[in-house]
Length: 243
Image (cartoon, rainbow, N blue to C red; front, top):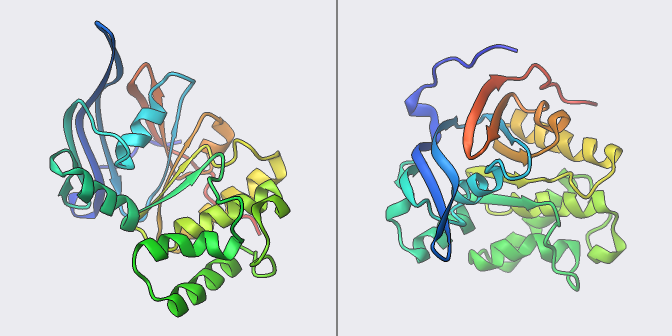
């Protein structure tokens, strides 16, 4: 493993400067993030890892515009996030960020096809266009034969593939995945990570939050966290796509 080279500001999609997050429990202040400085380039593949309580989930919520920092500056693709109102943040989440969660978060009574169409419905994409794109995305993740199946009729790995297709629906600037293999066995987890690696190879910016070192090492860059701080920032050599 080698130390990271200096990044080009013009290629930056995420820039965090002295980010702090403090939760208040009555009169007690609990620091979750303690002065995070981080830049992520467009088209890069990054994992954020660390033990439970290290702050990686809090950092993910801030990067994904799901929460606001208590202090500090967050620039996302040129936008100063802490200064935006809730409606603008919702718009960014809808159009600019594709989310993949550990628990899949699929509508249980909707088909795989409709689950992938849903973000495009919210984004005002015409019915014919969104159905065509949803089919293409499900085919892309190897589920062209499962379009009309409900989540209960799919395996865990298949459900996560639907979730990845859904995350790609509005052509986001970044894919943000929170423990995407946490509910999967080793074989299915490897298949899901390989999809992320293929998306990265196509030029997508991928950020994966995980406590599993073996999963973290599949990204080209590993951010290690502990006690609300970044304690490591290194390149990984395991970036090949398995065929």
